[in-house]
Image (cartoon, rainbow, N blue to C red; front, side, top):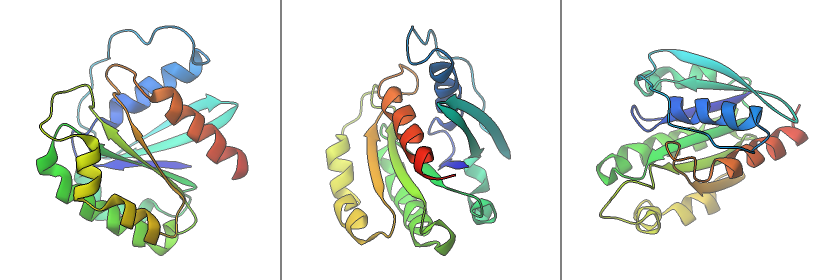
Length: 173
């Protein structure tokens, strides 16, 4: 199972819909226009078939206080950050540090997704990584951490996320 976590409005639901479409077309063909989404209240389970079935459990950002009750069967974690909103960065960093320090997630592979890179922002993703001291976080974490810059709306970087999911879930049953 893969957990998909992040603050409200970072693009988790759209990411899942896009990954599902991408996996069904074997990574070929156009994704088309972004489908409409609404903030998730609760949890969504989505199966993505990419070499093998991977279940993604998306938890709404408003559920952050009880995310830990879903850690049990987590093999991988996708954590989304809104790259167009530096004001949300410190809250996302606190959430990330909480996730990385959770004992139940010690063995999980983690991918941090900087989403909405297609939108204008006064800070680059590199500046954001530096501001939250991401290299230090990665160096101190027990987990294997990867980062990606994506646009769920435009589809940029999603094949890399799909490949990461495939590779991560190949080695974990």
